[in-house]
Length: 321
Ligand SMILES: NC(=O)c1ccc[n+]([C@@H]2O[C@H](COP(=O)([O-])OP(=O)(O)OC[C@H]3O[C@@H](n4cnc5c(N)ncnc54)[C@H](O)[C@@H]3O)[C@@H](O)[C@H]2O)c1
Image (tube, rainbow, N blue to C red):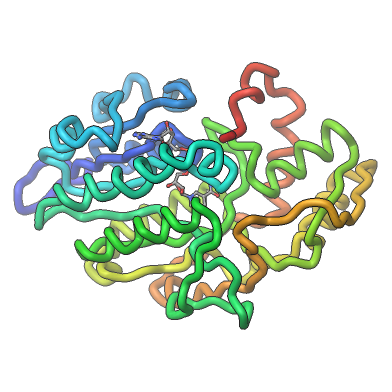
């Protein structure tokens, strides 16, 4: 049990969007470490992702909307940390319903920051999509951001709101790997799925440089920010690893190495609305002691092991748009 030594009570963490791809990996880790955890989520993809923690007395689930300020205020009572994951995620999902994206990603975040108490600690899940097209193609946290998609714009606005109240912003690389609530709309997960099921796929913008991070390392980054909150507060951190900066073609070669009979064809059809083609520096968080542990090869291996045997019903819930 993790105790607040001044009050000798369990440290209480509110996780918005805690049943999602990241949340369903993070929440069991928080519970294992002895935190009390409340998940506040609309459960767009159900609550099954948290079934493995069902008997844990330190877990509470609230079906709630971050756009509903009164309900949120109630959930924020007696909470020490807020890990804010809830959102409409990715540019396809945001473009599909722009109003939902803006009210959720911006107004929902504002509801949290407006009601944050002085002693509460806030950690926000942001994205490299905030960078947009970077002329020099190399990003540190000092690089001016230039979001291009509605997703990137709403997340950048969320970052500003969180910075105004002194929270920690984690700007995450593109995530890969399996989780209790799997997403197959993420680049590596999607390509491995296609390689396994269709045995072929086309790849556009093959030489674009991207940056990746396993979902378990993402969860570790949130734990790291909690443990190092006093040094990390008021700041933005790129979260990933220099060894996980790859071109899309590099990723394809790793997939081919694992799934030999897959045919990969470079294509001119298609583009990334966020124009992500950059190398990201992770020096700032690495200097504090955070390093990812899981490689893309390991992630491809676990996807290759699990995806072929997943039920169609489960697979049908894995896309966010
Ligand atoms: N997965 C990635 O590659 C990635 C990368 C960078 C940043 N992020 C950020 O991390 C966060 C979580 O992403 P994820 O991949 O776990 O997404 P996800 O879609 O799997 O999970 C989002 C969760 O938020 C919930 N939710 C949505 N609207 C809500 C609302 N109005 N009120 C309460 N709950 C609501 C959903 O039900 C879902 O459980 C997002 O903020 C996203 O922008 C994700």
